[in-house]
Length: 276
Image (cartoon, rainbow, N blue to C red; front, side):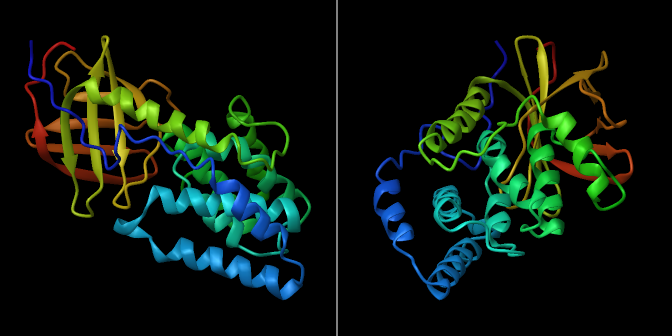
């Protein structure tokens, strides 16, 4: 049996996020805010906490805590008109299932003209990328006319109505962990890294290949199924929106993205490629 390389993702696979006691104390604190200045000051605190740990210092527990605070604050005090803070925090949430569940809250604010439209478009684009790992619209910014296009693609995964309860959060985030946990026992074909410290993983399981890109800040989308040529030197995406594919040439992995710059990655570790 071929040697199996464990995928070393920047996350503790055995760690499940349990913050059941989080809600009561924080919710009481947020609910007790009464004046406009108190509410504005609390939003600033959330922003500062969010920005404090970014880049390589990003912390799931910090981002999860801030996301919950955003939902609770919106529940009691509404969306702060034209503020980017709620969506700024939401953008940093790694779990596709969390974002898709709470998306109606931000979409409703956008429809009501309260959310900053540019930040909402950025958030919507991120939700699409988290689900499908690639962009629906390339080469230009998202415009208002694109929202329905994105929603049509995402509709099978989005919750339909607003829910300001944070009780579902833990199970949704744990589902994210469970999905990554499945990778631990997969046969890793290789790990490649570029100069910006983004990484690409190729792995196989039950006769199928999967692609996973992890960005330099440790964010990532859901693993995407790919299929290979006979020599396993080219991998194409099973779900094809664009002509994206991966080429393995010697120690390099070349990630070709239609309408996006081609990326070149150098080999970090790799097993002998054979039948999965």
